[in-house]
Image (cartoon, rainbow, N blue to C red; front, top):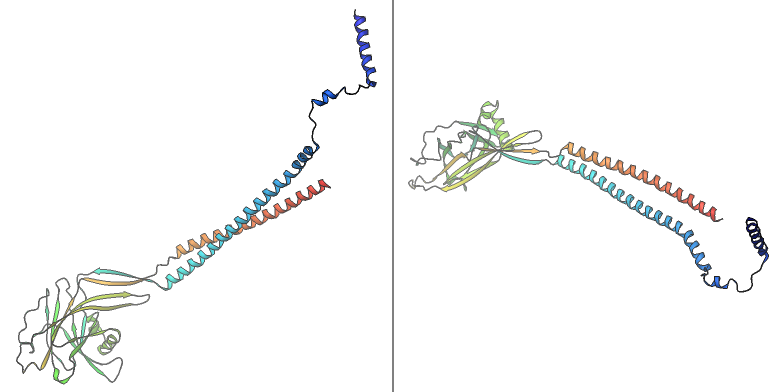
Length: 353
């Protein structure tokens, strides 16, 4: 049995070997070929072209996109650098402007009493008839107006030459002014002057800070000359009662301090009841009083803070340093990317050749 199987298989293999030289008849493979779809040569070529062209196109688009964003970042950082430089210039300009032009600070200081001011009057040919202190804004009715009366004021007569012309001799009647502002202390003065001798009748007066400065000065004439040079003068007219309310303003500058007076005046007509023969002498009435217990202080304040300016400049310089560092790194990265692109391009050309 085994011999037959072996011989049969041997013969079959032998037949197979013999069939290698056998040529099948025509049309033997037609049915098999009809069931298969032939591949188009164009499709095979297009797939190869896609595979070869997609790689460089993608790399080129990525490189262009990176270069675009790099240019945008450089532009943004240049813009920020320009803004930082402008901010530094503006900060320095503002600091110098505030340093050269300080602002004015006004404060009001309440006091219990003022120092006695000096009231310098230039009556000319007028005569001082009376000078009395009163309180609480009350002035008693006039008794025998136009005639000398007793007074209680401290008065000094000072004669000196004017500050603007040495040929003009000036005579000043200096009265010590009121001090008790809480009790509304006032000074009431009465002058008499013959109005027929002049076209206009008025008396000039001047206010200075302290009457004690006149007493303590070694040369009262020089003191009054300097006061007239530095202080303003006002006038009050005859036939009226002029009520002057004073206020003190102290101004502190960069190197010195000055004091000036501001005033408000109210004028009331005097009803002259004297006989007509006596009315040829014009009467002057003046009242001096403090307006309120507040002294105005004006100070020049420099609002420029150097520490704020230094802090802003430090921030600006740090931003400039960071921008410069970023620009340096960006340029290095662009050079590196350029070299890599050229190297890849050369490698592709070598592969093609």
